[in-house]
Image (cartoon, rainbow, N blue to C red; front, side):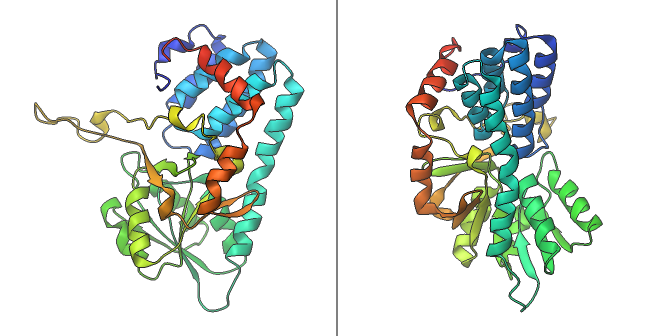
Amino acid sequence: MQICDKSHLVVHLERELATAIEAVRHDRLSGAAEVAGQAVAILARSFQLRQVDEAALALCRAQPSMAPVWNAAIHAVAANGNAEAFAAYADRVRRAPASVTRFATALFADSGVRPLQILTLSASGSVVRVIETLAQTRPVSVTCSESRPALEGRQLTTHLAALGIPVVHYADAALALGLEGADAVLVGADAVGPDALINKIGTLMIGAAAAMKGVPVYVIATRDKFAMPAVWPHLSVREGPPEDIWDAAPSGTAVRNPYFERVPLDLISAVISDHGVLGAALLGDVCQAMQTDRTLAALDSLLAGDATL
C-alpha cells in the first residue's frame, strides 16, 4: 500500500515545518536533488522542534515518488533523536554531487574528435551540473524538449543558452528525433529501485527509442536516490491536476496527467553515482545493501505512524 497524499495531515506540525513541507508538496519544477536538499533542511530543523517522526512522515506523503526524501526520513527516524547522527548523513548527501560530477567527467573525457552531443529531458539539477562541468573542458551540445505540462525544459534551455552551450529544443513527442548523432542520453532519477527507476514522464519513451538506436542511456543519481527493496513498493507515481493538460475537456473524457513513470533497468546502460559508474546488473545489489536491520526498523516505525497503511 502507498502513503496517501492529503495536505491536512500536516496540520499537527509546528507551523514553520508545515509551511515548508507544503512548499515541498507543491514543487513541480525542482529536481529530486533539490527537493531532497529541502527535505534534509526540514528534518534537521525538526530535531530542534522535537517533531522528527511527524516531519519525516509528512515529507514522504508530500513527495511519495522521491527516494531521497524517503531515505532522509528513514535516517532521521533511525537517528533516534541524535541530531549529530542525522547531520553526518546530511553531510554525505551534500558531498555526493561533487563525486558524481567527477565520475561523469571522467566517463565523457574529451576524445578530441568532435563536440559531445547529449540528449536529456526535464530539468535535472544533477544533469545540469554535469553538463556545465563538461562544457568547461570540451565542446558540448545539448538536445532537450519542453517537458510539459510544467515546461521546465524551457527553463533548462534558457539556462544552458545563457552559458553559451548550443541547444536544440524539441516538442516532447519529437524528442526521439534528436537521438540522431547523439553520443549519450543523460537523465536524472527520482528513485532507482531493484528492477526499475522512477523519473519524469517521457523517460520510458526516450529510453526505448535510444535502445533501438543503440545510444547509451546514463542515469545521474547519487546513492541517496537508491531505494531498498522494502521501500520500493511504497513509492507512488503521482499525477497532477487534469486541468494542466486540458481545462475544458468534454464531458465523459478522462484526462490523465502523470508526472513520473517507472522505467525498466533493461533500458539503462549504467548509473553514474557518487560510488562510481554502476552497470544496470549491479543496481539490485546496491539497493539490497541499503536494507539493514537499522533501516528496516526505521521504515517500520515511519509507516506505523500512518493509519492509512
